[in-house]
Image 1: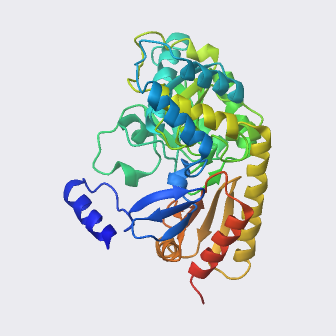
Image 2 (image 1 turned 90 degrees about the horizontal axis):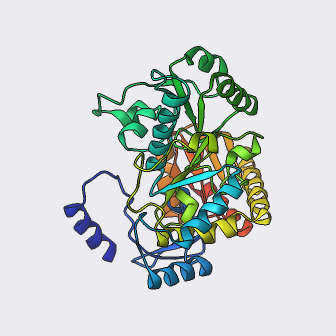
Amino acid sequence: MKSQHIMERGNAVMMPTYARFPIVFDHGKGCELTDVDGKTYLDFTAGIAVNCLGYDHPALTAAIDQQAREMLHVSNLYWHEPMVDAAEKLTRLSGLDQVFMCNSGAEANEAAMKLARIYAKHEKSKDAVEIIAMDHSFHGRTYAAITATGQPKYQKDLDPLMPAIRHVPFNDIDALNRAVSSRTAAILLEPVQGEGGIHPADPDYLKAVRTLCDDQNIVLIFDEVQCGIGRTGTFFAYQQYGIKPDIVCFAKGIAGGVPMGGIIGSARVSQYFTPGTHASTFGAGPLATAAANVVLDIVGDPAFLDEVKRKGDYLTEGLRSLQAKGDVIMDIRGLGLMQGIELSCEAGPIVNRAIENGLLLVGAGSHVIRFVPPLIVSETEIDRALAILEKSLPTA
């Protein structure tokens, strides 16, 4: 098989930082991927919530092709129109004021924490350096981001970690109130925890966090790297809670598969990113922002977002029907097309069986399977996925 030869070559030269599935993909169309041996899979992983418009989307591929013919990179020493267009759309869709663009979610979270500390030094005190993050969170693999991640398994052998970052339980306002002090510069959280098991924030909790930050002059940072860009049925998940952060971090789906991330901040906080305080060589590049403009136009359309909500409800109903047929699915949670099922058994074997049966799924912890298909997924494809999942679940 062609795939086996390619995997053997890869194992010889790639650092083994991923336990990759034994599949070598060749091309995709819509919500399907085809491997080099000709097998086609229904994709409910979407590059881990990245490929929001699926594969070979005509508008996205046309924009990338056109931009590649014109210019790929000019650096942030100069202006270009795709960058400005994307920034204007991001501020409009977020309700915030100014944008910084980079290449990934980890970089976005690093930028947010950096900006928050600069703000606090100027507007609070020189001792206001502490960042409070949440247990079971995930914010990326760079040093500050991995320190802010509330899962010790990701921090093994990396000590000493960054100072002045601590953790409290998610959705526990009393614990957060006890942790806050005059040294607190920022509170960092995901409105829907992704890698931690698909846990949405409680609405009253999130509103209380916003009030606490207002009262104590604390920068509120929402990490929407996974739950943003239409994934939950609003452009950003926080828009379902009726509040705004001071900084929102985005990445993953923003450019439909082209690497891009960034932050959007309120004018009050953003003013402290001045020339020389932060930068990114490839951030806001013409290719990524040209792709992002397509995503922003399509996903930012209220009618499209309404469809995401509707399809999310349809997926939830289907999962509940499966739950009622046995005792394997213990809980179903999420928003829009970011759903998770908690299982009474290990998730890994079920994911593997689903892949064998032609459905790509990904875990979110040892006992949770998440569903993050392309946002263009159809009800027919949801039905197919549910049928394959049912076939892949263990029987009594």
